[in-house]
Amino acid sequence: MGHADISVNFFVNFFVALFALIDPIGNVPVFAAATVGATAAGRRLTAVYIALFAMVFLTFFYFSGLALLQFFGISLPAFRIAGGILLFLLGLEMARDDFTAAFAEAATDGEPLSTRAYARRRFERLIVPFAMPLLIGPGAISTVVIYAGEAKRFGLTGAVMGFGVIAGVALTILLAFWATGLISRMLGRIGMTIIVRVLGLILCAMAVQFVIAGVADSTRGLVRHDTVAPYASDKD
Image 1 (tube, rainbow, N blue to C red):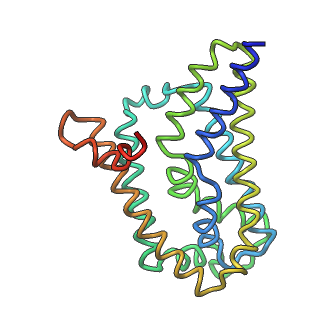
Image 2: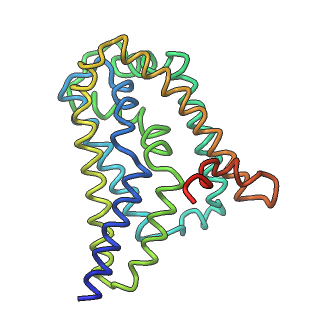
């Protein structure tokens, strides 16, 4: 019974940590901005592609760990800095209101598209930097790797539980993004424009924080601790 309680705690803690890092609900406005003008079917299929990508990508890292990064000689701090740069470019486009226009132009290209072709083209545009590193960043990857190490003591059960957590989080991404149409109608065009620009500024700040954390992790004493984790002391 004690072993069962430990495995349940592992499942719950892993799910909560991964859900908080990916934050599907918080990323709905960004997804809405990236799919402005999309049909309901096209948006739903795009959400399916993104959720499947998240599940496959995280599952790969769950079972392979950092082998890929190690193969290329890439550290997590370097990955964090690169992700921060990409996020900054995304946030800059959103803050300047170039974001929705860029996706709208790429989605049409002057020719009618089927729902599947539209969703595939939009998904190709969203893989970087939306699906990665905005949804799946260094934090999510490192969390998956850490919990994969803890799951080894459960054997096959741990592998199944870990995959179940990843699949569950991917499902929350799908459900949250399927609600985008309702959110877009509630906010309207002006509301979406305001939210996109504010989110752009927030993403730029998040990107700078990613870079600061990456520099702090790769150096010693160069960055102050309260700059890397400015609100950590408030939780103590």
